[in-house]
Length: 83
Image (cartoon, rainbow, N blue to C red; front, side, top):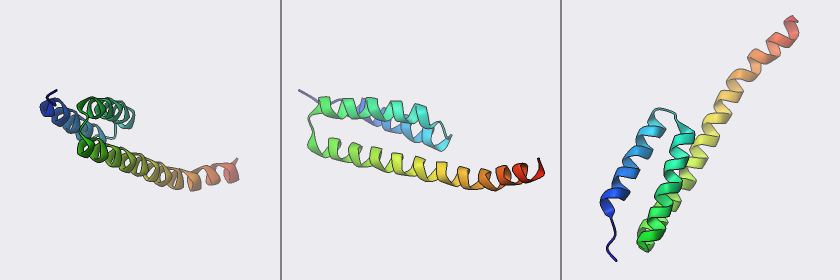
């Protein structure tokens, strides 16, 4: 069975664009589709690379969320004091 590297490369490009534009839910869906394609290819190197990239994406998204929460938290505290 021949692996369709073109489809995998296109999915990687779409994932990168979704992450760059902060569409994290779209990026996660594309990552899941990419992981499915990697499993269908039965290429261990591709599966490992996609898995590591997906874990890195989840870690990056968690860090971005924490930054946003830390920025919002002082604003919420001020609102409670003022009310």
